Image 1 (cartoon, rainbow, N blue to C red):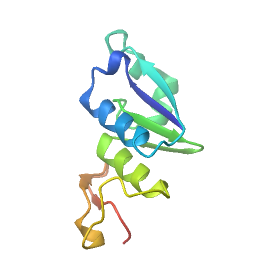
Image 2 (image 1 turned 90 degrees about the vertical axis):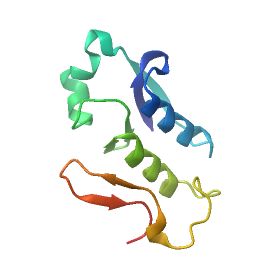
Image 3 (image 1 turned 30 degrees about the vertical axis):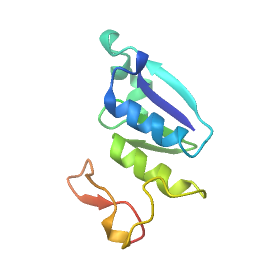
Image 4 (image 1 turned 120 degrees about the vertical axis):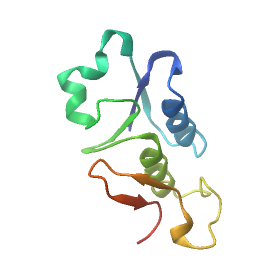
Length: 109
């Protein structure tokens, strides 16, 4: 996995995704982007991130942007203890707005 974030962890959203990957010990490579130089607007990054913002997680041919979506993906990808603890009901997980404007919830459908 590769996690793109702002250099020096200036983005709190990139820090959230970093912690979500570190807590369960998931292997990943951190790729810092210099936002002041517009590295997030580069064509190669735009192929990975619909919003061209940080963070973006790339796992093989799958890419996910937005910190809540990344946190949810990592929560489901890890076989260890749950990142958010045990939820009383699967629909009680975090909710975020997808790029298409649809709501998605972490956890089984």
